[in-house]
Length: 117
Ligand SMILES: [Zn+2]
Ligand SMILES: [Zn+2]
Image (cartoon, rainbow, N blue to C red; front, side):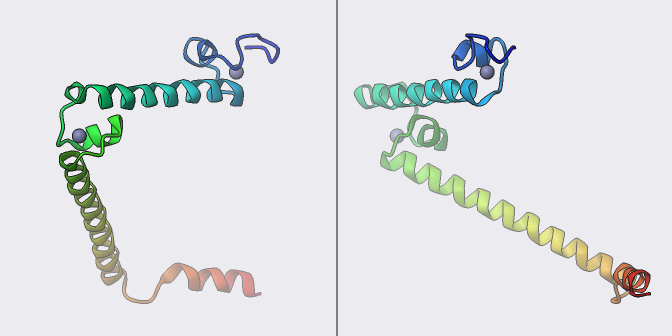
């Protein structure tokens, strides 16, 4: 799309023309935010619109009722735990690798030799 195209800064520019310039992105973001706000408003008027006790309702609908909050906390804790486990596995792998290669790291030594002379 040309820089002076009138479709810049419109949702049409972002969704249909697939332009990702700042102006089009901004237009799109405004719509998404508005959509989210509307959704939260609708849910406030009619809580039956979403299923409660789900973290998705907390995240997507912005619901802060007790069952949704609890679901979110559980989800968040599980996610954090999963991340921690993944890090532990990586650490474990690194340890194993060091055992195989011996404790002295080979590469850095060779490197310093290369550059010292
Ligand atoms: Zn654009
Ligand atoms: Zn809820």
